[in-house]
View: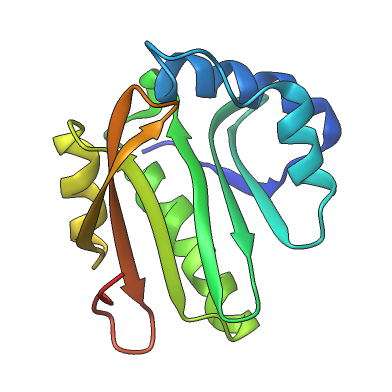
Length: 158
């Protein structure tokens, strides 16, 4: 098993994160997560941009935005060569612990309605399917909203 180091993203990570998003998350869509947009989240005090590194390689990342009582996962990606090694679960566990420490218990995310693998992954973490959001992805693809209440480990109706 690889050793991963988790740390907050630095401004120099923005371009690599944007490239991973284009390749792994936004495939088939016009890119909406530019390096500039990622950099904004790195600098924001209400966002966490978490990276996982294996040596010098950025193996995965997650971007979560925190509100007063809710947090929203904007992006999560694990580079192809590091998939199936529990890295996605480790990134999410780190974010869940951060949310608990911040007193933020209600979490949400959206994923492509057709992405059954991601849906199964989030379900194993306790997320529950909510409503379908028509045209969520640039009017081209529907999304499935998923939610988790960390206080009870079960979903909310969104």
